[in-house]
Length: 234
Length: 286
Ligand SMILES: Nc1ncnc2c1ncn2[C@@H]1O[C@H](COP(=O)(O)OP(=O)(O)O)[C@@H](O)[C@H]1O
Ligand SMILES: [Mg+2]
Image 1 (cartoon, each protein chain N blue to C red):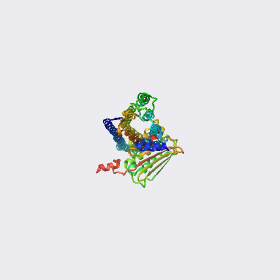
Image 2: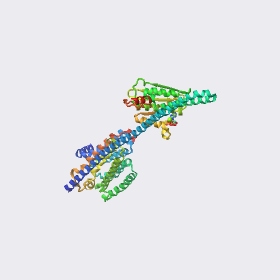
Image 3: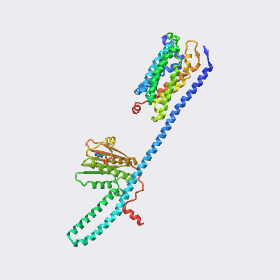
Image 4: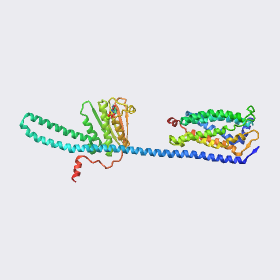
């Protein structure tokens, strides 16, 4: 009873943050409903949404208990990058970029682990665990790069008759908006998300959550216009 | 606790700028893609039109050339042959008195000239489908069949409703006629059939032509894939492309082959080709 009450108070106080968690269900459900996971990219998106939901719910739980949950966030960064850039692996056609994606996933995972240790000199102290310093920024840059590469290929190859009815365009646009909004906020999260002596940036803190929700809505649109028949034709 | 209004503002502005850029990238991709596709489509159409024009010209000049050859054959060689026949007739009167042997040679020459005249006439008629121009499709096809049906072991049947339908444009009629000719010729040449059935059906929108034989049959896809299509089948396709028609080949279960061509009806225009022989002379005397 107490638990539910604390959940409800947290939702009440952090409505926008919680929205970004719960809206995840919409594209998740739509992918299964539309059977969009026959496409390997959307399959990865499905896996991403599932892991995001699980991690978000865990973080949500710890947040209501006023326990430091940043370790989960730090762990989710390489997973998130691997799954999202993996989607581009199946969509980008040029072989060298494909190889680049694979290497970047490996390199980025190593980098994130290094960053976790770098930002937390005392790794055992979970209570004062803090956010990675550089990994999120690097993730933003890499993802923006792949998105632009994909758009460039779309323009060059002229294979898509109507881009507004092309599912992955929506997914890509959502990601582009999300990472664009995040790229300047990511470097300072390390200083704001701190247990002691945090930096206050006011409502800016909410911007990533707002755009995360927007991005999830874009995913939903993309999945909604996905049709198996169209995929088979490609 | 730290406070940093300046930093917040800077980040806010940077984020807004970044978002605006993202927004413009998305818009750019959308519009550029659309414009590019539109242009490509236009280019494609122009190319297609041009191809069609080329084909049309080629086929037109082929028909014109045939017409010219037929005209020359008829006017020059035909006239000469007629004169030769006349002279021979006169000569034969003189020769009959001189002996049996000479008389025999004389008769033989006369028969040869006679036959040559017939041949020339046949060739000119084959070159230019005069019957088609004057009496229409079914008359022309019937004439064509009659010429072929000499052999006993080939039966050609022709069913049509063109008598009720109005005449088609000259180009369409010629297309249908030439296609029928080629399909029937193919059946005779390649399929070892004993029966050919031609069905011609015209309504207000389309013309349907069906040529069925009971021979060995063939697989058009295999032909196309192996580059075995002869000039005949290709010619059919290019003729049809000009009048927006289509052709399909089927393999009926009973064996043999079946060709099914569809051509849309276009309202006939009055621009008849220059008619052969009799009309030309009339015009010349005016
Ligand atoms: N009615 C038919 N029955 C059997 N085979 C046919 C028939 N029509 C066409 N074919 C096959 O298709 C080939 C291509 O025909 P065509 O393009 O008219 O060229 P051509 O008559 O000059 O050989 C022929 O060589 C023949 O093998
Ligand atoms: Mg042939």
